Amino acid sequence: MTEKRPVLVATEADDITADMVIAELNRLDVPVVRFNPADIGTDLTVSARFGTCPAPVAGHVRTPSRTANLADVRAVYWRRPIWPTFPALAEHDAQFAAAQVRYGLGGSLYAMEGPLWVNHPLRVAAADYKPAQLALAQRLGLTVPPTLVTNEPDEARKFTSSHDRVIYKTLRWTPYQRDGVPMAGWVDVVTATEIDESLKAAPHLFQAVVDKAADLRVLIVGRQVFAVRITSDLLDWRKDYSALSYDVVDLPGTVEKALLAYLEQYGLASGSFDLAEDQKGDLWWLELNPNGQWGWLEPQTGLQMSAAFAALLAGETA
Image (cartoon, rainbow, N blue to C red; front, side, top):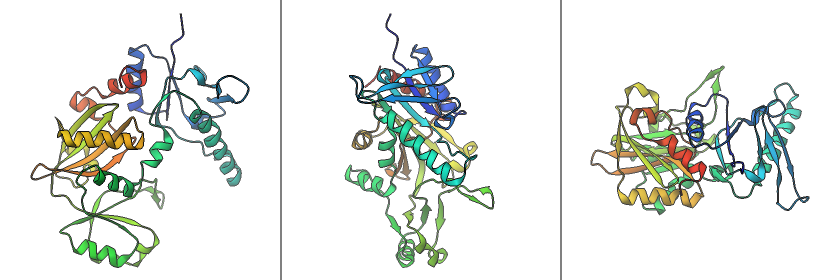
């Protein structure tokens, strides 16, 4: 009997969302090799050969319990991997070693032919720029709130003064601490009087507030679309999950078509979109997270999201 081709799942040790997908892959009797790049040297090894075999790349990824031949991998679920930092090494040695892992392990995986990536890290990186996201959304016919990216204080003051309410959003989530305390980058209202010359240090994103009735989190897996209406009184609903209520909704056909085209534009197999619904029921584009969270929504809504991911990785859906 021919051995079934495995799915690679790259993620950190404690990832409940990945656990949900792996459980569904087990139900489909699809072998899984789960690993975390941070485990290199202890619980993870890689060997890849080039130019000495018929295939462009041959070799394997090995954990203490599983081995996956690179030529046999059917799909890669690149979920929440953590790259090693080598804290025991001197600073420059650690930087050198970390780069070798990224370009050695990562490069060997990227060299594989054939596997479906959900999602390929290089495509995720390309899709992760909010200004480019906004422009593409508008080109695809989605409604985009007035937005300014600038490091010019006068431009920022003019923008905030010309709209009823304006929020500041980070251009990219980045781990950040102040005096050893982790800081969260919540969406928050900003006024012209709060903007000073320190803005010049880096570009900031300012956006007119949508007079919203609710938020929508839309998960697309392959061609399956899961849309959830999130109702709360919060400007940033992530601040308090206990204050949220959920309803499964259907998207207007034009919006669904645009979101599917959005993923196709970036070559992504999946993505989590955030939209705002205004008081008239119209939808506004906010952003795409190519690897956004969705695991908490499944038990809240009954939507079979993890099964959809497993079917996609197993090759049972388009």
